[in-house]
Amino acid sequence: MGVSMATAKTWVERWERQQQHYAVHREERFTVIADVIEHVTADRTGPLLLDLGCGPGSLAARLDERLPDAEIVAVDMDPLLLELARTHHAGAARYVDAVIGEDGWTDVLGLNRPLDAAVSTTALHYLTEPVLLSTYRRLARLLRPGGALVNGDHFPPGGPPCSDLTAHVGRRQAERSRTHANEDWQSWWTAAAQDPELADLFTEREQRKPSGADGGGGDNGLTAARHAELLRQAGFRHVTPVWQFGDSQVLVAVKD
Image (tube, rainbow, N blue to C red; front, side, top):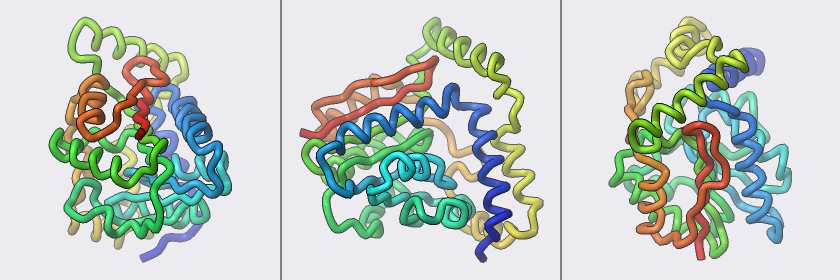
C-alpha cells in the first residue's frame, strides 16, 4: 500500500501550498514553535517530542531540521497522510497511527520516558471541549516538569467586532502574499483521489472515516482564552500566547 518517493513528494509539496491558503504566515508560525521547543529543551540531550495531528509531516520535518538530535514521535489518524509522511519525511519522526483523544490513544505511542514537549498545528480544533480537556490532562501527565505543550492554530477572538478585525487582517495578508489563490483543502483531496497510486489508501481512509476526512469534521470554535482555561484545569499553571497574526496564534503551556 506504500507510495513511491516521487508521488509522495508531489502530494506533500501540494499540501504545503494548500495549507498556505489558510494559514497566514505559516512558515513564521512553524519557526516560532521551533523557537519555543529550542528554549524549553536547551538543557536536554536528545529531547523527546510528540507531534499531535502530524498530517504529512510538515512540522515534524521542520523540527527535525532545527533540532536534529531530538526524538520525534508523530501521531495522526489519517492513513493517507501518514503514508505520505513516512515516505517523504521518513527520517524526521517515528509515525504512529492513532486517534487523538480516544481511550488508550497514548498507550500505542511507545513512549519510554517523559515527554520534553508536545506540539501541534491546526490539528486540535476538531476535538470537542470535553475530549480536548481530557487530551490536555493526558498530555500534562506525559510531560516532564518544565516540559511544554505548544499549539499553533486559528483561535477565534470571541465574536464581532474583534473577529471581523482578525479575519480582515488575515485576509489582506493572504491577498498581498497571493496565497489566497492557492488550491484549497477540498481541491487538494479531490485531485489526490484521482491518483491511482493513492487508491488503496483512499479506500482504507473511507473505511475508517477519520473525523474531518472530507473537511467536514467541524471546528470547536474555542477562543485562545478558553483553551488557556482548559489547560489550567488540566494542570498547566503557566499559559501564554507567544505569537499572533490575525487569528493565528501560538499558545504555550508549561508544566511545573
